[in-house]
Image (cartoon, rainbow, N blue to C red; front, side):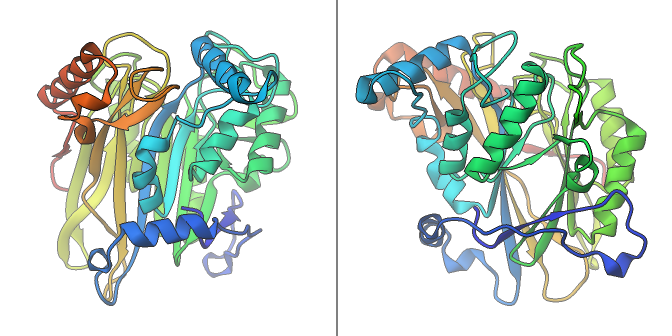
Length: 399
């Protein structure tokens, strides 16, 4: 959701707590999306005397060669050669995006730097980022292991494209401004949110001259957490690109980092990179005199959209989290995470192009699939997610 969303950039060190002020501001979302949200969130969800903010998180938005070819063919069929059409990508999850105040996704490819190509050195056209923005995604996470795939041209293209289409971004930036722009500080509906996006590495490719990427360095990340605190953030979100690919369980490094992040004041951890879902956990303790959620960790959201074929790579998680400013008390209240399993439908299965579909909504809707096998495969993986405990949040030891 982009209404009333202002950008604030936190400096790496702010001398006085009460002097934290916005460095810059940006205009908000379209009126059309605001009207759509109002229709989908009844008044009963907003307790009287309390302010709320809803966050929605999406996993890896990938761009393989087959996706490029299909997007090009779809554009050509309607408009002639020379463009890319991604119009089906987010259409089946629009109700979730419209209902959120802020939607955040991991964009795992540079954009706007031809020639375009898929794995292993990704490069996607600007139209992919534009479709993200047009569909209501507000923030893209850009620090990941493919951030340097197109070198300097890729960095320049991504930053230019984000600016042109109004996408906020975290995790990468230009020398000289990177420290002011990271962590990314958002202000929406009276809430101030800090986002720290970082990656374990960039596949051995060095950071292009003139640019910076937020790396998985504990000293650096602690400094960014401190900067978010000094900017009076109500909630601090860490978005690490970490973990073991294709594993349905978190590893020891993820757990060690989770503990460090929580100890230093991070409230919500949203992980990416494994390309498959991993568990979501909540830690509870005392807040405002009552027991409540102290922190949430999603070790991996898995893929949102891709052409990957390994087991579980067509599945992913969307996570919706409601924040509440209580009428009395200081701490922001973090609501129970709503986990929405998603499925990447291939061209011709549901829509003409690739498309993300909410699995639970489509269970029992066999008639909407072009083939019985496509439907049965989705149902099989939905049941496997349930068996593996990936469709609900687990409570950790109380904090």
